[in-house]
Image (cartoon, rainbow, N blue to C red; front, side, top):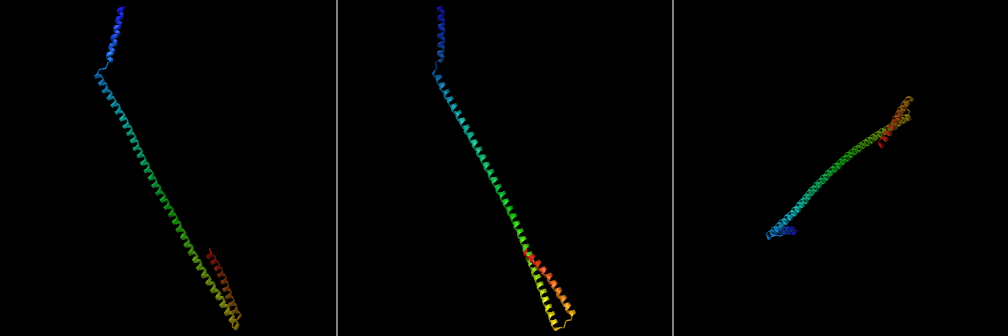
Length: 189
């Protein structure tokens, strides 16, 4: 049993020494390890820098896209504002044209009304002149009749004719007065 114990102990010691030898690091291994650590650090730093550059690139791309979108929006707003201004200008021009046409129609209407009033007034003046002439004729004929009657040169038949003539003139005068009244109504309108 001693032998077994010795063998077991020897095996354990050999295993421990082999493990210890494996765990023992040589200066070359330390140099390799430092170089590898340095490479890993450089690689990690490069990856971080690459990630940072990628994020900055994405950020810059987003800013470019945002700026482009803002430019397009501003252009669209400017175009819409210009279109609205043109539309408002056209609308105002149409309104002005309609107002101008309406004003021309009103002026034409006023002009026609003035012409109508002037014609009515001229007609009234003519009708009054005719009335005055008829009244003068009645007065002249009446005076002639009186003169002739005073002289006694007229026969009853002649007096009758003069009276009929004066009656016709008075009838004509009444008709003319109606025309004058009608012309006055026309002129007042």
